[in-house]
Length: 89
Image (cartoon, rainbow, N blue to C red):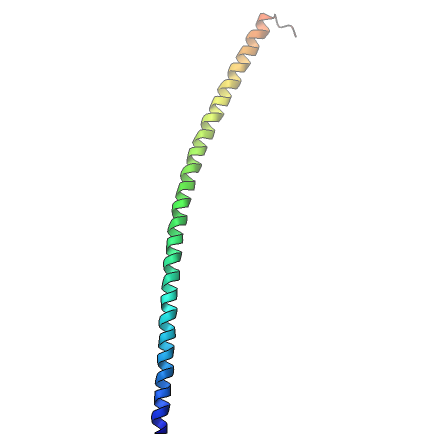
């Protein structure tokens, strides 16, 4: 009888360990799924940021070109004014 009681106790302990392992596995799967979802969200955000960066770089280039054109035009106007005033300062 004692050996039978010990076997039942061993079986109960094993059963408890299996239950704990199954619960841990379920928790880990939930955490994995949450991590995958977060990673997907972060990837999408990164792609949006990259697109915004490309757009801003393009806009910066356009503005720098425009600035150079405005500067050239102002230099031309100043030169015309100087020529009208006879070069007097």
